[in-house]
Length: 151
Image 1 (cartoon, rainbow, N blue to C red):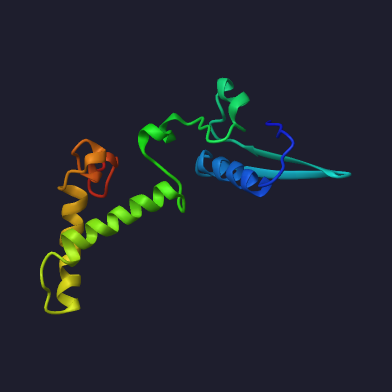
Image 2: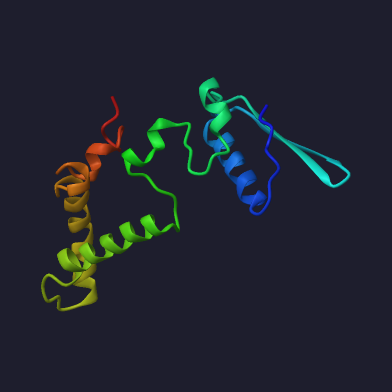
């Protein structure tokens, strides 16, 4: 069981992150339980799940801002959360690429013709076009077990 330090400010965000992590790390068919007890002006909240748990060496650091116990989600792996500046930048870059390489590369005679070309461009973008951030590899190389590639 984790004991929260006294929280001020975004306690709801902390609780939301804690529940999100519990759900993410609990296997299918597992359970996540949330309980709270009020004692005067204090509220004790407990979240229990039957997921893999937090490594003992990480327990003391879980309330540090930006700390990630899951090494696969650190900055080195390039993942980010929605609606954050770094994510918005990635979306803006994708939109720029979308315009430069598909929507405005040639003159289309109709919207239907442009829409017809989109799946072709998207396939090329995901499976054949190298990306600098991925060491020249297309995004599909980073995703295990893509549809039709199950081992």
